Length: 455
Image (cartoon, rainbow, N blue to C red; front, side, top):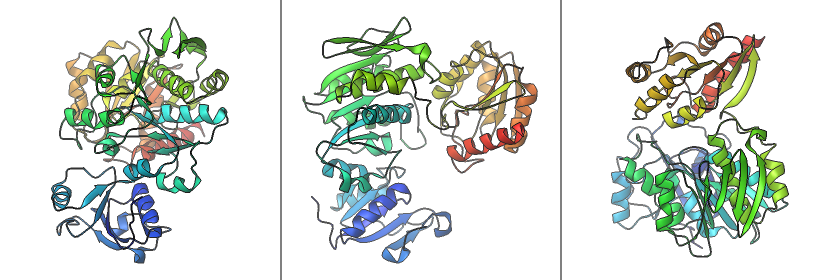
């Protein structure tokens, strides 16, 4: 166990991770400085005595470098290879993070979930299954409880389910006992220097496993499937298209093929989760929870009663024959494509937001091919870029450009143009920061606008 007493520690990036690191380090007697590119008024320091740490804030927060510290705790949103971090590391400063420290200190077993999308749904499903089975289990990472806060509660028999992003995994030196790798497409090109670095970061979830561990990989995606070449763990797969050792969908049935057992879990038509992409999440959750010791009854009861997470293809309400869905968590074109494929009803889709450096040509082609998409409503900074991609694909439906209109006006317009019996879907395929605080704010404002429409 690392002794942080009287050590000089820089907490780099405020937020849930920063607060988690700060609270832990304060109990350890460290001398803490908090660094963030935002000003004090832009950050939430509620419930926190700023006198307990030195604050280094604002646009020039790294101008004096980080060389004078013993440790740097990097928040996930801070790029691992910033010149100031690399320089400090070269001078002997230890660069770590909440997740790295948690892997060092956790006495229980960790199930880690990564991928481009579906991490939250899969992590929560596993947690609910294992909890239903009566085990001591916790959900943390990007969702659930802050990690270091959990440590006093954990025992050797505890299970911790962690949703892990490329930002967290990029410099990991340990891997979880059970690693689930979902689809890997292209995302976060505004953070990573290229796609290769993005995929490489995710490989850390399996790279440090032993032959006593398990890897559960998305068979239908080359990058995820190829992780099998770099892990020593026992390998399982999940698939919507192939019979595999693990879990798969065949003729509308979910099959679990693990440890020599072939179990019929149930029919996909009975899932409350909408969309074929969620079949993959369900299969990954079934396989991993079974390997963690959950019984088949706990698996069945959970997956067929699970309604999904907020802001992920979330049913909002029906107004005058039009059903509204909130998929604000969709921040890249691949998840929007998956959302499109989840509906057969006449569809109005709301697209657009702030730029993440992504390409929208494939999404444009899918929209053009989908005969049920009657209207595309474009909003936000990069609506012009998305419009070009859709027009290039010869989309024949209506395109409405509403720019940065008030969300109430956008929702009202969707109601006016969507045929009765149709769906109005917010699935923006972009980040939200041009018009909203974050994707949650975007989704909540959308839901409130629908609620007012209903009134």
